Length: 459
Image 1 (cartoon, rainbow, N blue to C red):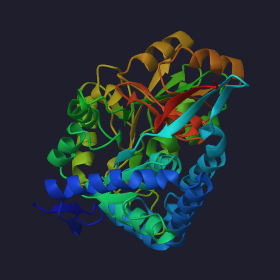
Image 2 (cartoon, helix red, strand yellow):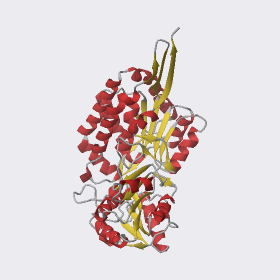
Image 3 (spheres, rainbow, N blue to C red):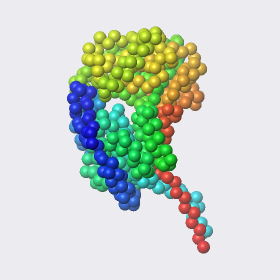
Image 4 (cartoon, rainbow, N blue to C red):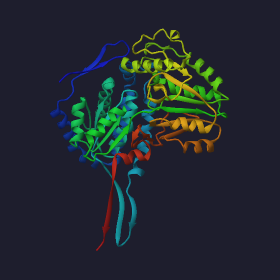
């Protein structure tokens, strides 16, 4: 089979190359996962938790190598140190709530009946992981799936395919059996064949809308449950009573961090007319403090996008918007590392509207459009005028106002005075073209288990 190449955005070189499994080898891997599942689920919950936590500890011990590899694979500056904070916090929280969440719920235990609801592992969980936060997005499903008694087959994005290898090495070294957690390299056709032939009992995919549609088509008629997180066009709304400096700092960081390649990154901002001019001025000044450069340089705060194809999409959106009347406020000459390829200068656009792709389609790059609004009603209309619904960020001094506005926004998470953040105690979910399902929180365990009812009568 044709090898899959990982092209580094740092210098355009082939950083890694792997040959995907043949169809027969892929079927055999799925079969081994199925055969291993009952034995894994029979282990005590405390033992499964301990093994998972030991696997994550091994990841932490390999931090230096992992951070360097991430920079080569997807361009994030090494100064940000990888994803260990989130990986550790999510692992710890899901481990803490596992026993209570997975415990049977007794309805009756009398001299006549014993009735209770239990949670049972689904079987084999298939994770199709993305490249933008390759460890975090995998951990979201991997940890609860293994703890709940499932076996896991992981297919990582080709842009970060070494991440799957590092995860497997860490968990196997901790004592998780090789057939319980397998990392595989698959092409699209083999992936779709396995799903269509019920090789898995749950499929979790994070990626594009088109990718999610392909997963759904492959699973059609199989009744295989799916978790689909397909990105967003997340808005920020700055009300008249907002803390302006805090709003600028958080929203612009949400728009630019990781070169804008965050599922829940801020992609459009609506500012009350009373604060609009000041917000734009401060936002432009904030962006000008960034340094675009090689991710291994200590001074770089913005690295290349993961692939020059992705950067080309963003450049196209910006050019179209400017041609349609938008104004670009950042001179690319301020960022000489912009090479017309993967290295892309950040941009702030004003005079934008929803006829422009940059305000409606996912950009997934270091660009944000800012619009002036006159009141909450106009902001709500614009925030909901999107095919996506992942998160929304409201900037105000009043909890009740934020909650009331949040109830009217079609999205999965409402933030007040915060953005671009995952709380492991809250469900990570979305609506509309963002997809369906949920991870993290106690609901994350419900996604990888099924209810089983026991109605036992004493005669």
